[in-house]
Image (cartoon, rainbow, N blue to C red):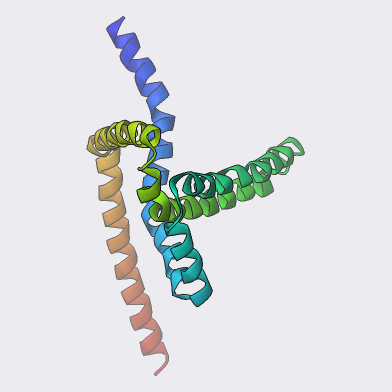
Length: 174
């Protein structure tokens, strides 16, 4: 029975872990991409206004983009149903990237206000602890460690090939 529990937990935890890893991987760089827009004067003013919102207004601003993506995801489902798998998948991926980028930046801007909502803080803190624990277990796993090693190896290999290619082009151009 204990083995069955472990197997079921692993099966159920795998998609959650993948989702959390995507969110974690995309959260910081995508938020940074949106934050770079803050250098535009009008965008910077908008971000300052969002950061200054009261808690319930911050919750609304944080939640609206998530809800706005629902029709896009429904359109992707429609496309899947029509057999347009590549277009549907592209739409889902684009919506996921855009949604993650927007949600990440909005959360950075609204988190101080959101944490003033007692129920939000009570829910967020255990969620964050649980999420960090799951990610720690995933990162300690054998597949994750092997994937990291492979990534480092592939990066080095690509760097060497790039260096050789540039050298070959330079010598051919002489």
